[in-house]
Image (cartoon, rainbow, N blue to C red):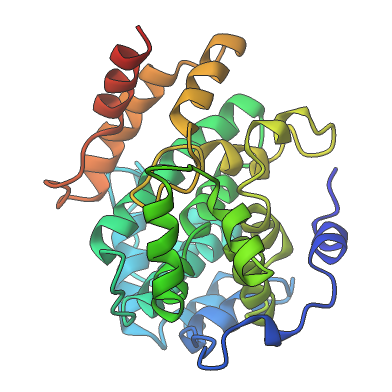
Length: 305
């Protein structure tokens, strides 16, 4: 079993906030989210006590009830309070949902010059759904994989604002000399968005398992050869990160997914893409400009033939 706290410390180390640009301001999460994350570790706090924390934020309360009563969750019993919702979902799943919702709510205030927030969050949701399916095949924690994939790039809207010229240069470079985003960032800044996000999540007192999923999400297929991580949610998140996105973070990502499709008997890329598209439409109603994952896979198949 992976010791996530030890792994985070080994990779991240004692990193200073000086890695960020001078004008960078670490965003503040809703108080209810950070308090829930902290108190959920305490065995003395059950659904009743944790429900009172959630109810301090009416927006989060509504989102939680919307989730637990949705067809996507498929519970027979309906919840009318945060306490009931937590009891039905479980503390860990509720925690992961509140963390992703809290980050989304916080990042909505960022007016990115490079990233369309609505499309960006739809892409994150797509990756989250995909990661949870990969985690199921691995026998890993599907809820953790979903949360880690949803949060893997949460800091990019803010970073691309702070370093707009550099990220524009990266996108321009992709047409002539394609390279991975983390390699470009490391060379240009001395840090990358994985480490930057993990550092902020540590400051927010996020659970170490989610932090590690974000920290390792650009490990690619090689994470599946790691005897300690190959059967964990972090591997599922790393596979989901290969799905192409407008930022063109991983050149040849789709080709790597097809490579995995050929090597892993249980991994059916096209079928998983279809399932993700169905679930995405159920959760996110406004995806009219989003090209389905199935169509992108089919386009890649035509290119390969």
